[in-house]
Length: 226
Image (cartoon, rainbow, N blue to C red; front, side, top):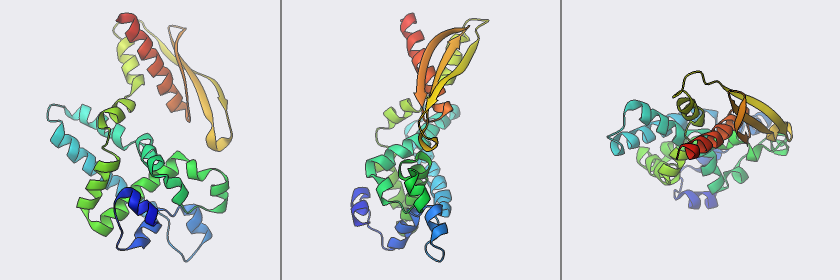
């Protein structure tokens, strides 16, 4: 735990809060009478994260309308962004998981990692107050803000807007394959415009694969127009 505290730059007065933040429900269910799962902390951390990021964007992006602020906030607090934070801290190695979850690859499961980040933020808030939580969010989540915002761009919407500039355009996504075990599947998707494939991509979910295919299609269409 001390190593993790050094990584986040915060020392807990009540270290059980940090231990609780790293306790997955599978572990709590196997160890009745011990620490509860981190689900309540995750609930609190999600709200704290949203508030701090929204406050930051409101103050630093006075030129942007509500819709753009909402989109950027979503990109910064999404699962993918939080998984990047978890990986930078090697958070998976600190998690307390049940035996089945641990053997099933739970330490690398995106949802578990993202939830643990939110729970950790809540633990810092409860232990040190909103100022410490805000500092940690700025250090971990709001770093490389522009890059993360670009990474969170909704390419499916961007592609739809591009093709709708001409009437009669029909977009369709098609699953072309999937591989890997159930806990770590990879999906392959292609996007077609009027029956012609204009982009392909893959991801850990069908939605992620669709975004990857749309991103490739947007890049191709924008290059053609350049």
